Length: 300
Ligand code: UTP
Image 1 (tube, protein in one colour):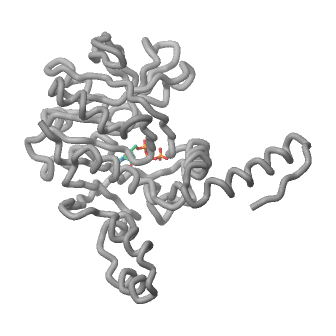
Image 2 (cartoon, rainbow, N blue to C red):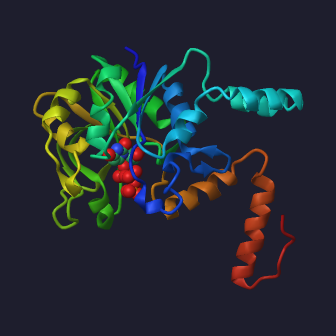
């Protein structure tokens, strides 16, 4: 059992990042030197995806350009002998992987964006990845960890993470019954509950394995929280018909849809970057020494 198709809903308005997202896509914001969407694509490919389906909206042309061949740039890099950079550009989409772009005419919500993928996904199980949830998997990318669970159970699998009780109102929250370590069956799912009403603090984050049944259910889903067609509501309906598992992945998640999460990701990926790590660490040491009033070290 393999999953070949991955859906990337990238049509949101990205209002929390205005004005940066006025004319360009939130998913193109870089973490050090790679845009968020490229991390997401690499994660999908590492979990076996070969067909990448992007649900795009206005101001998202840069995403299409990023995954397209750049003849002039490649010729220029080649003529200047910049082989390493040329490889970096050419490796963005490996051979055998194809990209499909579907336009979501109106940002009617994540559920609606996923529904737009139906003609391209057809009757297959598929991945959904939200690129602004960047996950640094401890042993394996999060989606590959979820794929292992899928191979064992053959059902829908959602990535979940425990969040502080006061934050539950920002997430889809699940009530579950444990079936193994880090793995449970979802009994109930509520989008953005009030903290005093939430029955758990297990939050759904931006990785899903879904069966195609979701499309029929999305078709019937009315506007929910925030006036949007919510994926959570369709998954809730699916719980009456199919098993849906919640998997607590191993790794660190950075909520790059928020400014603080985005800054954290840049700092932590910067500290691991092969070319930058040493200089950047030295720079941060100097900065924190300033804050603590200790003598300055030389800066990068
Ligand atoms: P968010 O809730 O983060 O919304 O969407 P957003 O518009 O991107 O950002 P803010 O909250 O206004 O700052 C979660 C994911 O669903 C996609 C987004 O692109 C993001 O990946 N999405 C959301 C769509 O593709 N279409 C929509 O109509 C809504």
